[in-house]
Length: 193
Image (tube, rainbow, N blue to C red; front, side, top):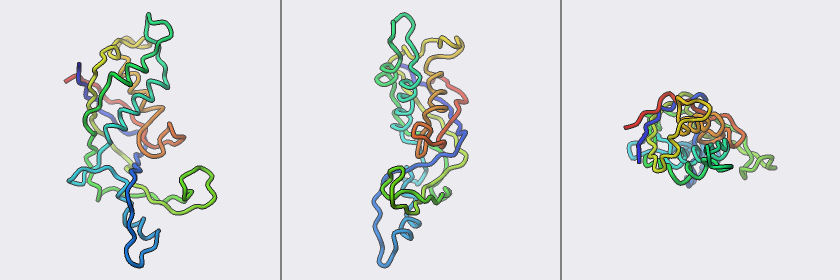
């Protein structure tokens, strides 16, 4: 088992959409309530610092492995997908180093039921972080993913898939995997600890 730290830098804005319960105050409209409570979409720790959930990073990596379908040399048609799904853990959320009070929002006119092309539209407010970077810790249980990449012998399959995750899958709301463009990232470095 090995632990790798990856430094990730956003190449597009990052937006979160965590579900939260909104409670209307006396005489408050739905729109006023949303304007007051939109920070509830953020994932924050007890000190109010924003983070990327560990599960988001893990799912991003697993989706990228499946999307890229890189073949395991000498194993016929087998790909690394299972190795990434079962053999990698992200034990900690990745801090962004920004307090929730410093995050701005964007107002969007979206379908009220959340489905594309829905008949009724309402204003919704989501947090947006234009520039971001973080360090994420990946625990490699299945070291098969640390083999050299067939395309580039200087990199591992893990590095190749992590870079693909940033390009094709992304994280957060409106990410590339969901037909959006937020949450893309580049991999600045990967080091073993």
